[in-house]
Length: 124
Image 1 (cartoon, rainbow, N blue to C red):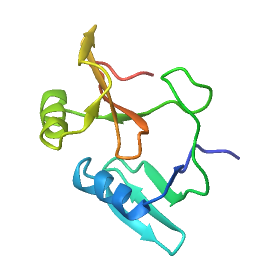
Image 2 (spheres, rainbow, N blue to C red; image 1 turned 135 degrees about the horizontal axis):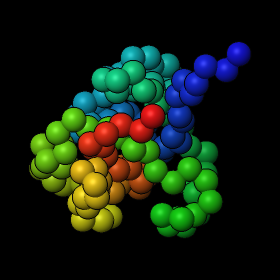
Image 3 (cartoon, rainbow, N blue to C red; image 1 turned 180 degrees about the vertical axis):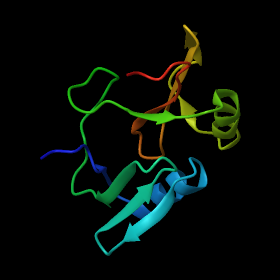
Image 4 (cartoon, rainbow, N blue to C red; image 1 turned 60 degrees about the vertical axis):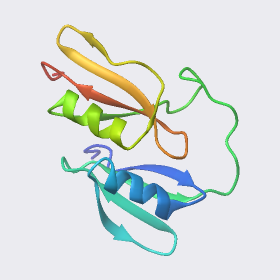
């Protein structure tokens, strides 16, 4: 029986540097490491597997086919946004608010799209 998604993999030419971003900037922890992969885990238990890339990806936009972004849930949007600014991340949008929800899109060091997300009322 399927119970859910255990992790998502991101291919990178420098998995150690990408792991440092997710741990140092976003507060994840390394919970498993081998010669081929580094697993990083968010405080809520969500995991990413960072694996070695074998080839370049093509050009992408926010609407290119495939996985487009990872949403990073936050309890304090303003503090998380200021933390990202202090780490000089590349923002793709300005912060937006709608019905109490707040979001801003940005890139990790490899150009993967992420966004901070604060939901006033979590989805069911």
